[in-house]
Image 1 (tube, rainbow, N blue to C red):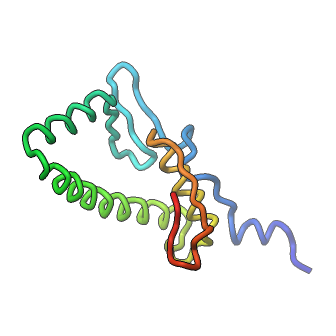
Image 2: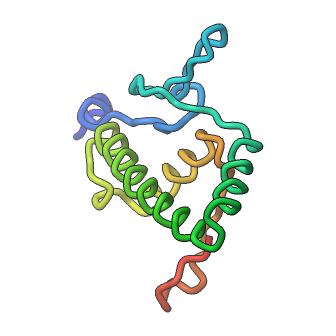
Length: 133
């Protein structure tokens, strides 16, 4: 017979990596915000982002879309690399080895914890090769 203690010792149950109480820490006096690895995070007001968009549009005109696309692609690649590294280290398995439910929950919680809002994936058109966000 298998002892419950042996099961818990072999595979500890890990919680939500991106839980805000555990993932974010900061010092209000100095304005420092860090993630659980000690990397610094930056909070930008929405008006600054809107100003950057407006300035790009004014300076570059129709080329601003190309610039924003390339910035987004660069950011997305770097985000994926950081996300994959952090999750793989914490759960001791690669993203490819994770169950889809686990991966989606991590991604949703990451998005929410960083303050980027929430999203929902609809798999209605999955068989046709589309995910609706």
